[in-house]
Length: 313
Image: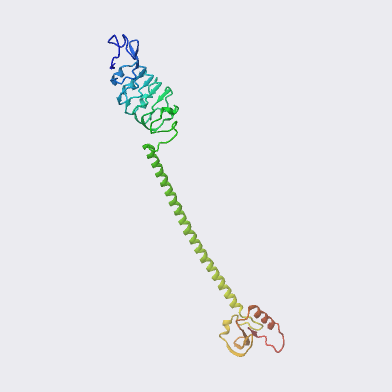
């Protein structure tokens, strides 16, 4: 064991009295070397202390990396390296694999890195303290059961029981940026899709309205033409004896003679080849249709030997 001998009347730690060193059956089982500012330790020699159960190196000026040989002490129960100047990462994966380890006290050092480990739980550890270091990242669930004082004074450490998220954590910041980017892309896709659907619906609606307007216009024109045709067909009222023609246009081919003009309209004598001579009265356009119908019914209802019924208007 390469530790400075403090007091002994023998050259072997298993014989005589060595301060801070306990042994059993010729094997060192306990090292309690606290508050020794001049302590110098060869960490590699710890690997030979296979029966070591308690290791106390607190309040010294030990520096450098975490003593890797400690991770090979399968029987160790208590590990105390607090109040030193260790500045490496904590090998949590290896420490959680030590089956008998109950205490890990690493507070007031300069340890860096995270507390991540492949182990999801380590029920054997009941005393844990890493406060006052430079640790970062999230506190694992299985060690979050320890009190707040076990994690304080680590500015970039977060999670239960600290109760806050560290905004400066690089891994979480990157994750938040990635999540924000994904959310932004999703929002842009949704907006673009909504705009495309809106444009399609708008164009479809305009086409529908335009087609409907054209259909209505054609229907209206067709109705108008039908009305005009009916009006033209109904413009002429015939009485008895007029059978060879049915339209006003048929009279344009016949020979007509003006007989006189009145308040209602003008009267003509028209010579028709098949029917002989007929009398036509052309009513003025400003007269209302119902007035003309009434007048024609009145004239058509007259019966007298002196009245020629070959009359049309």
